[in-house]
Image 1: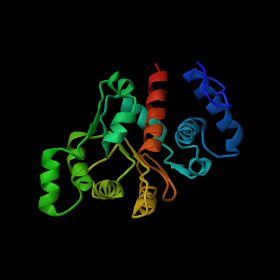
Image 2: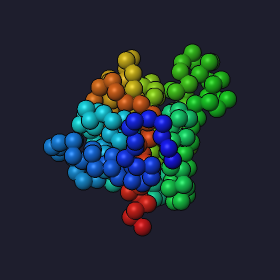
Image 3: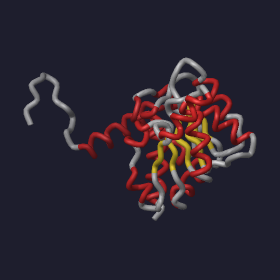
Length: 216
């Protein structure tokens, strides 16, 4: 392949590119206190966003990785707040254990109920999700209101997720919602501040599913 530029890529082989990326991350990440399993999640998050600061800002409940792996291997549903996460996650690794990835935000009943109550679809979608995904993994990368509603339902004893990956991005309630998540005594993965988003949430989720697969 002839690239019409002065710079030539180090490799055009996907596996070589990924391996070199992880090598660079390991070289540049610096000292940290993550466990080896937690660092595998952090590594993929940094790989997704090329942001070491975000990686260093990640927070894990002590049971987060183990509980996430168990949820995947038990065939629990993964609930995402937006379709972008559903599109990015490795569904075959989840489906191999009998699970699936669900997004409820565009369901007609969710849209209708949100209009009736004059609230966000993200909030109503979480109310629907807890009924259909007990013990599941909740992956929230876009909507702080979804994360805050999930936190409320956890506090009220309405649900007990297997894992919450809460890394919404934004300027309104994003950082605050993650602060609230970090106060809960349930398995969670989050980060500090406004940064986040669907790509990094997908990366964290894919790291969990990959570890679940590799335990076979």
